[in-house]
Image 1 (cartoon, rainbow, N blue to C red):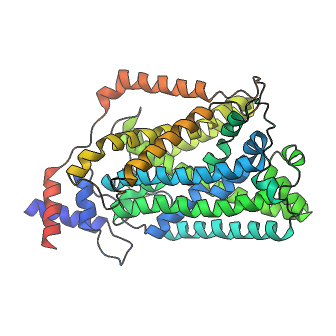
Image 2: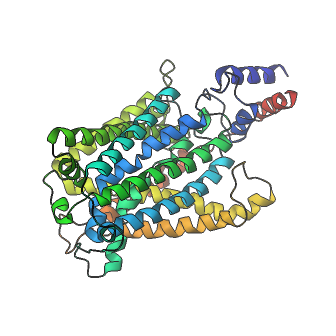
Length: 451
C-alpha cells in the first residue's frame, strides 16, 4: 500500500476544495481517475461562483441587445418575443440533456485561467447591477408602445414572401443570447461534487439569464418607438438609438451603452478562457497539430500559455478579416450557432440511444432526468437543434445579394472537410484515448473506504 498511500496524499494535498478548506472529495478524485485522468487542480469553485461564470459568459440580455435587428425585420416585436420564449424553454432542455451527460462524465481536462472565484462572483454582480440600471431607466423614462405592438402586430420587412419562413429566419435573435452555458463543463475538475454541481450550474444559468432576458426583452420592446427609425439608426445598433432617445442625451446614452459593452468584453474574456481550455484538452489527447506545445502547462502561472496565445492570435486575425471583408467575417461569426448546436447534437443523440443500457447498469450520475423527462428533453433538444441549424443558413433579407448572402454553409463545409482530412491523415494515428491507471483508482478507492 506504500505507493497507493502516496497517490492519496498527493491528490489530497494538491486539490483543495473551497468549501470549508478541506481536501477534495475522494469520490470526485476517484471518478476522475476512472475516466482516465488524475486530479491535478484545486477544486476551488463553488456552485455559486460557477453559476456566475456561466451567467456572465452567456450575457443573455446584453447579447439580445446586439442581435434584435434580425427578428424585428423578419417579424417585428412579436417575432422577437415569442421566439425568445421558445428559445429559453428549448435551451433548458438542451442544458438538462448535456447536464445529465456531464453528471456521468464529470471531467473537463482543463486548467484555470479565469481567476479567483470571488472575481467571478463580482462579474456576476456587475451583470445584475447593469441589468437593473438599464431596466429601471427604460421602464421609467421611455415612451411606451402599445401591448398589441409588442404581442400581436407581426410585420415582415425581410423580403421573404412566406411569413412563416421569415419568422423562422428571425430565430437567430433569440438563439444567440443563450449560447455559453456549457462553460460549466470546462470547470468540472475545479469544483467539488462536480457530478451534481456542473449540471445545476448549466441549467441554473439558463434559468437565471432566461428570466433576466425575458424582463429586458419586454421592457425593450415597449420602448422601441417606430421600428422604421430604429432599424435605420446611424449608430448601427438599435439599442444605442433607444438609449439616445430615452435619455435625450449623448452622455446618458453613452453610459448605458458602455454598460452593455463592458459586459460584452468580460464575456469575451470568459469565452477566450473556455476556448483555450478546450484547445488544451484536445492537445492533451494528441488531437490537434502541435499537441506537444499546446498541451504544456506553465508551472508558475498554472495555465496552458501556448493554448491561450493561439486563441488570442486567432481572435486578432478575425478582427483583421473584418477590416478587409465584412461579409467573410459575418460568415465566420454565423458559425457560432451552427457549430455549437451541431456539437451539442452528437452527445445528445448518443445519450438518447444509450439511455436504456445506462439505466440498466445504474450508470447515471446524481443529476438524472428520469425515464420520461429524459427522452422527452433529448427529443425536444434534437428537434430544436435541427430547426435552428437549418434556418441559421438562410439569408435574413431578400433578394439575395453578395453582400447579404449567408455564407455559413460554405464555412461549415470548409471546416468539415478540413476536420475529416486531418482525422484521416493524422488524427486517427495520433489520438490517444485516456488510459485508466488502475493503481491510482485502487488507491483512491481504498481512501474512500478508509473514510
